[in-house]
Amino acid sequence: MEVTVHSLSEVSKEVEIRASAQELEPHFDKAFRGYQAKVEIKGFRKGRAPLELVKKLYGELIEQDSLESVANELYKKAVEEKELKPIGDPLLVDMDYKKGEGVRFKIKYDVRPKVDLKEYKGIPVEKVVHRVTDEEVESEIARLRRMNAGVEEVSSVTDAEHIVTVDMQELDEAGVPIIGKKTQNVRFYLADAQLEQPFKDALKSAEAGGEYRVKFEHQHGDHKHSVNAALRAKKIEKVKLPDLNDEFVSKITKGKVTTVETLRADVKQDLIAYWNAKSERGVLNSVTGELIRRHDFEVPESLIRSVLVGLVEEVKNESPDKQLPKGFDAEKFFQENRAYAIYQAKWALLREELIRTEKISAEEADLLKLAEQESAKIGIDKERLVNYYKSSDQVKDRMVGEKLMKLLLDSAKIKEVEEKPPVL
Image (cartoon, rainbow, N blue to C red):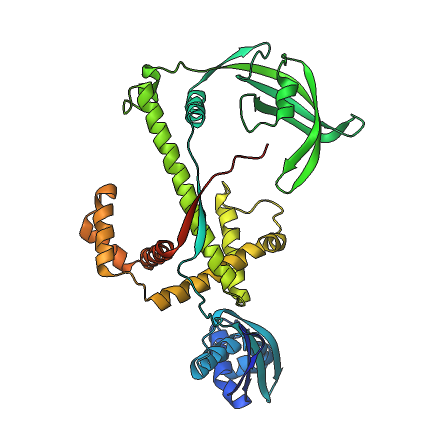
């Protein structure tokens, strides 16, 4: 077997494999015997036809059919002999076979790029500080009241605490209904902060059976589209908020909190914890983003594809039936998410190099400490947990990743900055 390796790029190689007819014989014989076991030939029981007869009748077809499998076997042998160190799945890009003369395969494969580490400690980043206000606390308490509210059907809207159920008919520019563009039983909660103002304005005095118009430009992400619709109010409900008192607090917390003031204090602490966690994630993203910016190297296509395939699986798993949405365009999805996939693949490679350089690992003492922390929480014996953690690559990888991020964050030059108020 003759093996020649061609370099296509820093991360992409092509191996050319030539095998003589004599070298192919054992591979073809294996294929013949496999076919012999399942073929049915008149006059013989299944799997009992003579091998020579099988070769005579189907030999050329079997050879052609087995070439891809042969290519895979020869590729594995070439990888071992030449120490090629591929990553991802190989791709057969060319094949030339002439019976009795041997075969030539060309197989493309990816390799890890060489990552030359730049400075990765002492990275300057900003940490955005959010100060929780009394208004935010009251807004969260109002949300808790709405979650526990009742409703009463009424004839008209008198304030924002109403839900209006409408049939929404889309209109063209001339105000003519567009056939097939009618949505029934759309519920608008007028006190919802996320509800667009034109809907609130149109329905602020709505009466059951009345018809109202909305026409505005709807902004969605980086694009916008026109909304022009007629809303027919079918049902109006008054939201009856429960009184904010100690009885209400005790009820919604199942007795864990018994006073309004204690609830306010707990809500404030929860909001502070939420914003602190968000701020920490922001610092983490800034550090990884800066590291990726400082390290310019080509990412293997197989790794990018692997990330994209994983994203498609996430879309599938988020669906109630665990299926991709009808008409899902995978290639369009890949194009739209390619930049993100490159980012994630690049960070994965950089992360590995940082872990190797810093000699970070999950030590037995680390696993024991984790088991001690988690044992009481999940009700599993500490020794059982330790044994599980020792056998779990996922747990150890997570622990190594956490150690790496702690090292990077501990060395980072973090400057706290006040959060800027939103632009209205």
